[in-house]
Each structure stands twice: as C-alpha cells, then as structure tokens.
Image (cartoon, rainbow, N blue to C red):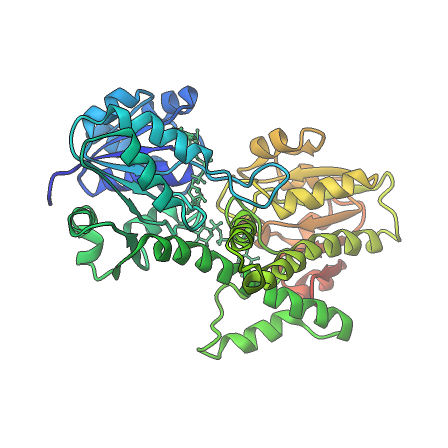
Length: 438
Ligand SMILES: NC(=O)C1=CN([C@@H]2O[C@H](COP(=O)(O)OP(=O)(O)OC[C@H]3O[C@@H](n4cnc5c(N)ncnc54)[C@H](O)[C@@H]3O)[C@@H](O)[C@H]2O)C=CC1
Ligand SMILES: O=C(O)[C@H]1O[C@H](OP(=O)(O)OP(=O)(O)OC[C@H]2O[C@@H](n3ccc(=O)[nH]c3=O)[C@H](O)[C@@H]2O)[C@H](O)[C@@H](O)[C@@H]1O
C-alpha cells in the first residue's frame, strides 16, 4: 500500500463513513468539520448519527491511532496529501438548484494553506460544471501544484460501510495521469477486489452521479405510477412489480411500490439536475424528471387520503399512530422524509398524531417540533383509530397483528410500504389498506 495521508473535509453521513473506511484499509486519516460539537463527539468515538456498523469502525480506528478529527484547516493542510471533499450540497431554499457554497468555502479555507503538492478529491454530489469551475478557483488561490479530481460517491445510507469498502464501481474525473495514479493507489484494495475503476473527464464523472440517482428515482416513480393505475383498476401493484422483476432487463431492485423516495439525496439531486439542465439550455431533455418528482409527491397525498377515508372522511380529533419517521429503514435521516411529511399533513388536518421511529425520533422532533413522539410501537398505537406503517423497519414488518390489535381503539392499518401480509392482518380482524393494492 502506498502510504498516502488522507484527509476528509465534512464529516456527515458521507465523510465520516469515508474517513473510517479508509482508516480501516490502513491509511492515516484526519477528518475535519466546521461543526465543533460534531468533531468533539467523533473524536470521542460517539457517532452523531445512526449507521449500522459505523460506530465499531470509528472506535476501532480511533483506538488504533489511524483516525483523528480536527476543526483546524491549518492542521489538515499540514497533515495530508490527498484531501477528500465531502461537504453538503443541499437544495437551495425556495429553489430547485443545489447550494454549492459549502464546496467553495471549503476550497477557500484549505487551498491557501497548502504548502506542497496535493490532490483534492471532490466526492460531494455537484451540478455538472462545478469541478471545472473549482479547478479554476484552486488555480487562483495557490501557486503550488494542487490538482482536483471528482470522484462521486454512490453509497446508500444503512449500507454505507459495505458500499464504501466494496462499491459497485469507482468513477473519477481526473485532470492528469498523475491524479489517476494517486487515486489508483488510494483505492488499491477495492480495485484489487475487481471493482471497476473508470476514469473520465470532469463533466462525465459529475453526470454519472446525478444520472444514476435520476435513474433510481425514475424506477421508483415508474412503479408508483403503475400503482396509481392499479388503484383505478383493482389490480395489485405488488404482484405486478414481482412479475416485472423476473425480466432480467427490468430487474426487481428499486421497483418497490409504496410511499416513494425521500432522503437527503434522490429528491434534491433530481431537482438540482433539472435546474442545471435549464441553465444549460437542455431542460427538455430532463422534463420527465418533473413527472418523476410529481408522481413521488402524489404518493404522500394518496397516503393521507387513504387514512382519512378509513376514518370516514375526517381526521378531526382521531388518534393516528405513525410507525416510522426516517426516510428509510436503518437510518435516522429525516431529510425530505415521506413518513414525516405524511404525519405533519395529518396533524394539520386535525389528526391527533403520535409518531414512533426506532432511531429517528430525535431528528424528527427537531424537524417537526409540533408532532408528538412515543418511545415504542405500543405507546404510539395505544388508543389509535388508525395505524400507518410509513418506514419499513424490521420491527414493524414483524409486528403481530393480534398483539397490536389489543392496544388500538380500532383495527385500521394503512401499509405505506407494502411491507405486511394483508391476509394475516385481515384474518386478525384488521381493515388493511395499502398503496396500489386492493
Ligand atoms: N448521505 C449519503 O448517503 C450520500 C451523500 N452524498 C453527497 O455527499 C455530500 C454530503 O452529504 P451528507 O454527508 O449526507 O451531508 P451532511 O449534511 O450529513 O454532512 C455535511 C457536513 O459538511 C460539513 N461542512 C459544511 N461546510 C463545511 C466546510 N466549509 N468545511 C468543513 N465542513 C463543512 C457540515 O458541517 C456537515 O457535517 C452531498 O453532496 C451529498 O449529496 C453522496 C452519496 C451518498
Ligand atoms: O446520492 C446519494 O446520496 C445516494 O442516494 C441513494 O441512497 P439513499 O438516499 O441512502 O437511499 P435509497 O436506498 O436509494 O432509498 C431512497 C428512497 O427511495 C425509497 N425506495 C427505494 C427503493 C424502492 O424500491 N422503493 C422506494 O420507495 C426509499 O424508501 C427511500 O426513501 C442512492 O441509492 C445511492 O446510490 C446514492 O449514493
């Protein structure tokens, strides 16, 4: 292994995972964030978010002395020769476009402090054209030989460690053979395992990332559009999806019908992609993504309607148990969470909503302080007139309809993720409704 010293700038979901995984591979790694509290917690081995397997990786590598954290850009510039940029690129307030100001600000903090040759590796998801612009900015900020590569990340929350150590592919937009050589050294373990390593120009690398997320979002909205048609015809979208999945050309992954996609990535990435296409004068090429977004949001409205119908047309004063707040299971992330959106909408319409999520209660309470939260399924369900399964955590999939039935006021359930067996719930006396299913 070539002994590069790596730094990771921005220690959120992506950066912390990347830092700990690269340390696990044997590199010395220094992580930096501008959030002092976050850095203090990470340095103490206390992961500030939920990600299976990551606490162990973090603690093991802290203890081994391969992984450290700082808030000092001076220390970071002195320490490393390969700097991974993992700061956030959220949706701009009130707009579709991405806010890349954190990328620029990190570059402005780091580059003037570099005293020797270095490679900066952008991992954040950015609008196409960003890397070329940032490379120009780096040139203005230093006369040292500092190159920029763009190496987008494809990890999924909930599987972040596995996806980082064993990715499907590594893609890097590189400016030179020297930059490519360094990246091959950094990713030698993955490349040695047979992971495809593709080098491209900057715009191709940037586009691979956003087009991958656009494709995944489209696949989910495709099956949810079929769910709408199923609802109008009495067909069953879960059977339809299963039948489609046996066609290898279609494949079953990301064909799960239900409440649709949320999170800190798919929604904001398709919107930023459309905004960028507009700037480039090719908005027509991506106009289908407007539909993908609209189908996705319609599922949330449909969910609210189904629950209201079960209550005879009004939520007023009725008890609603919401199971799930995270945007997907095995995550505590509530960014653009369909579950939380539905819970808030029902509360606004007069429902007495109690939410329970195995990991996301705290984040959800920060995002939606007006909602009430319970410490368990039983506490959320007690006295409920309708129960909604909105995030398919294992413990919700495994719920016993008999046991839950003794707690609720009325045995009404809406399965927002098609995660339950309708026959079993109906046999236990529940009125079972689901999206896209009779
Ligand atoms: N969360 C995920 O599963 C994945 C995220 N991505 C992309 O990675 C990027 C980061 O995403 P997350 O980790 O989810 O975001 P996050 O919001 O969890 O973390 C971003 C971190 O950057 C820090 N930061 C902001 N400005 C900074 C600066 N100037 N210097 C140092 N640190 C700074 C923030 O304090 C925060 O801790 C985004 O572009 C996202 O689209 C890509 C693949 C997967
Ligand atoms: O760019 C990113 O940050 C990441 O975005 C997604 O990862 P993630 O947001 O962690 O979650 P996914 O597993 O993709 O799920 C996204 C949403 O789609 C929903 N989904 C997923 C699959 C499905 O069949 N149906 C469905 O509704 C999930 O419930 C969830 O709300 C991509 O899968 C990653 O490859 C990518 O790196």
